[in-house]
Length: 221
Image (cartoon, rainbow, N blue to C red; front, side, top):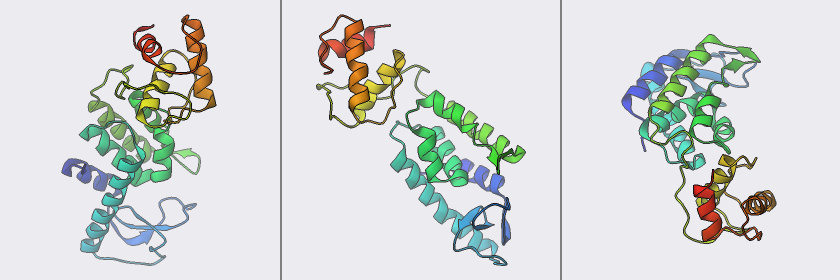
């Protein structure tokens, strides 16, 4: 998936274009130049041309698009993808991983708003950007707020299972009130939640999600 031109224009608007290296926040480790290009290759006093600024911008966008593709397991619409590319361009891939870990669509959108600080202080520019990303992300939602974004598994899930089938299970458990991280790994904590769910719903308590447990997860309140 590629970022739309409208979003590229918006990112460039937020970042601005500076042809001489600068630090938006004094505590930053590296310098910034061009359209938010940040890293060890930028040094104090460095200058570039406008053409070079846009060349770096195109290169950086590809890197952050790849970061979104790699770190987000939820199915994303174009607006959701664009919003996360903008977020990652500004906050980095590490913060993207923290943003999406164990969260559904609505929770991700809400958490985006929290990343509006620099050196512990709320910054108006970041607040405006996060609000724009939040609204863009929600504008592309094709799921109900409480809808499970993962496909219903057709095979048995048990301890040791991994992948989106486990994420489906963990999402359903969280919907039923269990505190479980949606990480796609069926470990001890997920097994304990499954056993408790089975016990509460008069199912065989074996920690294995077969047809009956799956049906109860889907249809139970």
